Length: 241
Image (cartoon, rainbow, N blue to C red; front, side, top):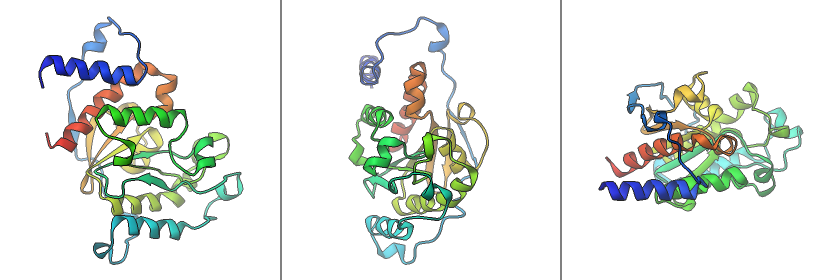
């Protein structure tokens, strides 16, 4: 890809995200080198799905959803949630996004990432020439915490095995962890997202990239450049580059 095409891609990406100007600060032109390490990548704790090799990913996901049922396994069932927000997208996706938990809009519609943050996520997906229906989107927590508070550790521990089963069913090439809680849950670490992003982690048969949550970008639009750098890594992996 020549310089003209690269510049055009950057302009298109930032335009889709609503960026209307640029900074002359030299720090914006300094890029950290790509890093790769062998971070913890075990899918331990995920429940095995019997005879998975003989069933489609869509069938396995349907079974996982049936196993969740009208879940009462943790206290969130009694704290105002409307419904389970399981996941949405292509069961055979090469790219999977994992967020934290449903918000108010998601709780009403039963679909992850449909509010303002979800609209921004759609633009992020489109920036690498994909559509929402090409990827799979899920959350660590399947029920909305009251007031959109952070998930409690016991809620994560109770719910994340279902996410692990979703990952096992879809078998994505790349997982993008959106925000601190998703990244910490998947990588089994307490490191902040600012430390976790910028690297490529091995996660079972997939590669995992942690980046900022779209809701954070709505509050801190100056970090959209960081997400663009992360998504370029995602695109390169998907292209086999």
